Length: 254
Ligand code: MG
Ligand code: MG
Image (tube, rainbow, N blue to C red; front, top):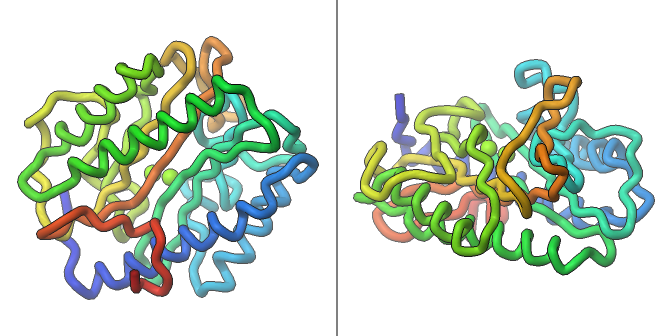
């Protein structure tokens, strides 16, 4: 069931989204060679709790940590560990925070020091594909319009589209209806209405789009070992332009 959020719920989701955004801004400063992904996780957890929120992912279906930290060929759901970031790595950090029962969800890929031109290309165009999707997140469009915009952009730039994982509705549950795939047909799928909140999250690879799940049952890697990037925002459908809840806003006010 797709829920339409009330004005009160939207206010709470703005705060949740803002906390996620602020956590990304805070963590950014620490992303450098030598820090472990577990140290980043602890920083994020303490920060989220200091904002009167709780980490959405910790304990979700048994996930053990606050962040998903996915390095290089890891696509998503990397588990923070004693792995030390090194110059030339790229890392996708996915953050979820729950405030008064409502979630915000946003992932971003970051560079560690100097990265290859291929990685720069992958990151630039994965981020741009997210905004191509967001542009279509307006009332009267359908989910397929978002999906198709991302797919078209990714294909034009020869990037692989991970198909097994998709965006989703967000609310009192971290993952709600509808699914928001990163591929699909224009004009198909659920109609977008004001008050719907969805996470749009292209996961693109520099190589082929095949993936596999590691033995830890969480971490997803590219099959061919190529690097992957992941950019995600939680978006509110409005009467006007889409509102990015996990973008630049503080305490719910833009
Ligand atoms: Mg998500
Ligand atoms: Mg996420």
